[in-house]
Length: 265
Length: 202
Image (cartoon, rainbow over all chains, first blue to last red; front, top):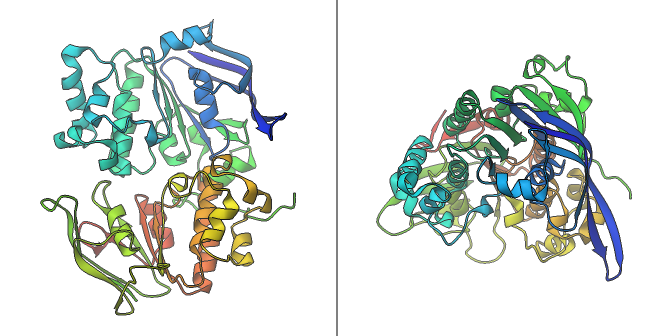
């Protein structure tokens, strides 16, 4: 469904008035999301996961330079194609809860982009499914807790026209029972034929639903793994960073070999 | 000892977000709070750290109410550092605002000197959160409330941050209240974990 080949992204920044500097944030990233598949991208903050999502959707700022190849069902993802797909075929769950409109009641925001006839019914169903009471619909984003805002953001992306969801960190700070509802929805959507790119730092959540997992570090894909490889002490994983991610989980050893240290630069 | 006595909170004076929350934390003790999102855990943390006044009840430190001005001996660390740090200040100013910082602590969290000349948006979430933690470790601070402090971070960064955090906090005999949805994490870190609903051990 989506195929990315050797994607690199650099940003041009100004240092002072006249000097420009180029900062490289993605290096030769190649990956694929097949039809009816949940693909997880795991990595630390700053590893370039969100940049990748924004590149696919055409949401990068103007000072970004892309090279490489991105395709949607074989067609090159041009600006124009991205605009047609966004919000109709591909839905996006942004990372920051600041993406909600602060001046609109959250119920309204979930109704946006739906047909008039069923918008209210769909919004009510979604709120019910994610444990948001009907009074919440009348509130503004600042009146909600962090976990509640996450659930609203998640609800905004659930449409019946969706063929692909790009979810950028949709789950942090939500309660385990809500997390389960979200992951169950991902699996239900996959059954219905939707492909999902699940970007997260929550390895445990990813392993519960993903068909394949890519590990990102410092703008590169360092490993592609099957969820079944994450067992024991991670012996069947290849990259040392992937092993560390696995071992550092509180559910496992809660240990890593690395510590913070001051480097001299 | 940090004590919250029969704390209650309401936004509008009519409906209670929570009532009758009592907890006592000794110096050197690590207490976890586990509960549903929207149940008021963050508001409870804010009340303990004097960011808000409770609608009912009192917060006392060694039997004395928390001072209402000056540096609070109870410091709160949030989930989103980008919302807790002035976006227009360079990191040097952010740190200096909280007073002199021990070099030991600066180094324990691996802060780099050249980051001090950067703006918050030029650092990653994990790097920024380390600044938010370091500035909370003023010598006068004896308690820390950590509200979903590492929820936004990957497991490797999370583990490294908690390791450094505990090293400093143990050295100074600090008390800690850790608020999280991650029960496995709370079990790893805490002496006891309370259910926010009942305030009973889980």
